[in-house]
Amino acid sequence: MYIDEAKKKFNSLRNKSDITILSFESSCDDTAVAVVKNGREVLSDVISSQIDIHKRFGGVVPEVASRNHLLAVSNLTNQALADAGKTIEDIDAIAVTYGAGLVGSLMVTVNFAKSLAFATNKPLIKVNHIRGHIAANYLSHHDLQPPFVALVVSGGHTALLKVTDYNQSTLLGTTHDDAIGEAYDKVAKVLGLGYPGGPIIDKLSKTGKNNIQFIKSNYNKKELNFSYSGLKTSVINYINRMKQRGEEINIADVCASFQSQAIDELVVKTMSAATRNRCKTIVLAGGVACNSHLRSRMDEECKRAGLKLYYPSPIECTDNGAMVGAEAYYLIRGGLGLADLNLTPDSTINLKYSSI
Ligand code: KG4
Ligand code: ZN
Image 1 (tube, rainbow, N blue to C red):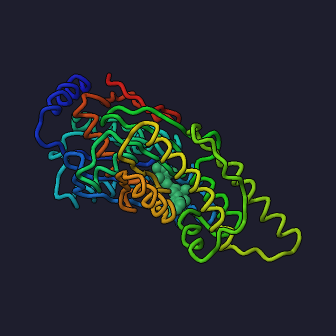
Image 2: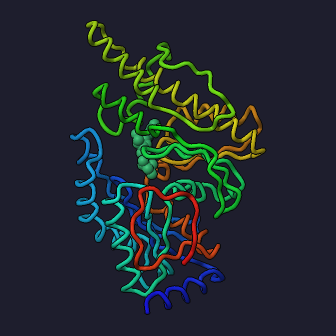
């Protein structure tokens, strides 16, 4: 039986000195495959981005995304192994993101990874996308270890977590409505700037001024949840009002004002979470962790408060396969994450794990 053999191998991996993982990610519009050694060393990391395909629709079209994952995954797997100088025989375990994300997209690499695990009799490790984003920091920073407060900011997530150990975290706050990346993408769309909006707004903000007050920034510091729909709606209403009046919109000022106010909420609440949880280290993760304003504001605040700040390299902030391999490594060491062949995508998973 596959699962008996996989369990035996999985248990023996816990004490193996070196673990090499082949990992898959396709939760949104990037198909990504990587080979990662010991959770910290990226042997290869190949990504097929669909940005150019979805650009013309102004956002990700789920059905189109899954079809393109399907077209890409097989060749990317061969490339990831070749780039790492490995064959499938050298791989100790196969890891895959199984949620959260677009179900049709997740399904492609979940099924591919299941088939590969079955055909090669290797353990299959299921990885939570949000935890994968956090683990991307282990690839960039070899000295980083828990405990820390993590801020995960992407197109699908805005979450603050207290990470007490590699496999242990508590959710401190999340968004009541939109994710911050979603707000960036929507504002960019309304301004006619293209997709994905985050990097474009970030760039244009550098030439604009924070001179339009979209929201009042009197946050309750004890409340660690976020809300972005109010800010997003306020920006859209402003743009519509200006258009109705026939007034010229200063796009750079709109971008700078939106960005400054959106990032301010993240900074205030992340610093408050660290203070309240007596954490000396803060970690940023997810696509929005590329943001230059977030990075510089957090750098300043952490310096002032004497805290250590980590964020991944830009390529490891956005969706990638290596982060999945990093997270899977720590799951294996902790005896967690083993999946059977009934694994299915889950768009709404929480942050806990159990092993079968
Ligand atoms: O982590 P990611 O690749 O995918 C999800 O898990 O969602 O994040 C993509 C998101 C998009 O919303 C994109 O606009 C945003 O990250 N993003 C940025 C920047 N670079 C990417 N947002 C703000 N500033 C950036 N520099
Ligand atoms: Zn992501």
